[in-house]
Length: 239
Image (cartoon, rainbow, N blue to C red):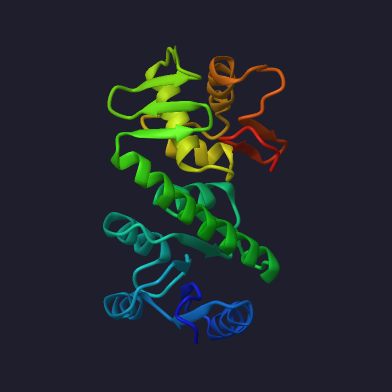
């Protein structure tokens, strides 16, 4: 195998599912290692580096949510959760413990492939943004967000931000050209107390648009993807 191919660790106690994912993802150019449970996962991680983990929620012993929480506390390894339970509450819990995405079984392998590629692309974009963050700022098209002073300039002019504005823009800037659902935004914005049908994130997006968009009624930076969430385009171009 070519070491340049992304390495995926699959953790699922169903042999048939492991075989399916191994065969399909390997055929798409990924290096796949599949294991049945948490102990085997930890052994693999101790001996190898991976680019993505796919975790089943219902595992023997320590379940997938607990494993995701453990991974997120010690690594930045991207995580996609799989579960036979597709209820919103399970998806929200999965995102809360640190998963990057959540897919309900049964699923179309092509949909999983699309999500794998999206999560890996997001990770690559995050690494690029980290370079700027080490310098204490994020460059966002014509905007520059100072992470230390929490100051935003747009074309050289100061733009006043509330603490909520700053946290929301920082989240968007860390996930450029990546679709974020309302649930994901509420999970990522620090200090946001959410409720099951909370739509306050929409209010916060509208407020931020008034400050950074040339025409808030026709946004070019924070785009609405109807029925799915928001997508941040740092250069204001069509995706």
